[in-house]
Length: 370
Image (tube, rainbow, N blue to C red):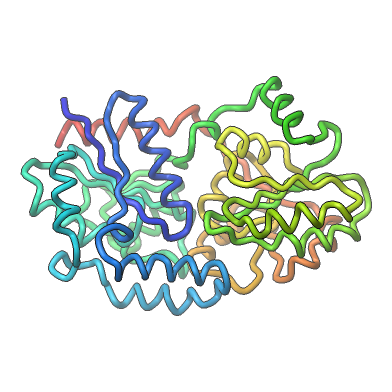
């Protein structure tokens, strides 16, 4: 039986592609084939500009996303298949792959692109939406919901309730838990921990402060490190820099003048990321859906970086934290982080299976019924 899975994603932020690639790997483990396609970045220079503009705002002034988000909500650029441009070669590629099942992990790929594929592909397929938002809020896009889709999945009940409020049929809506990379579903063994700590010069006996970076390299690491000069007690800092080479090099220089150990790292794999989150005293990062979900899976306490404003989409994730944690620690000015460290830092921990089992089982059912 054809088990070809097409996953529609976009590079706006980092969580969409993280979930898309995780699903691709899980599906291949089940014996199916899967590809990730990004029509917003590959079919039109105009759409690619829009994606890059999104990331530019996120990097330099997230508060401006209030205007960009609501513009996209009203404009409905990808809502109608007749107004979508540049898709001829893309459709040919999808026809060659011949998907039996299509899953979208991005809000703006759930309407016009679905209608386009249903009109062009020779074989029937089922279409599902996996929404990574953690809860409802002013950043929950109406474009996530399409009653004509065969299924709407969410990681938590709050996600699915937000979809139902926006007229997603209840019988098509299913809470399936987080969709993450494999290492987040299994604990790190002691031998792996010892190997990684030795590799990076991390002490087993000193508390770890973890500084996170989004896929676009958004962080305030240098401000935080300067603030931590005032913090008493023993600690070490792992500063994840991702693709932000400028920050990585700045910290390499700055650490020479600090009395505490700082380990700046560029992109790390899922096994290392899961280990760091489980071992950290806290994570300081923006409230993006991907990072926040990983922290929840690992039970990591969080301090949220809300400097330069909060994106509407980030509000959804903060709302989830408000619902499930005793308090929420947010910081407008990273230079003040040392003042928060005397307070209890809240975390959320959920129980999970060793895989996104509920999601995969239902996707297999959809695939067999298409």
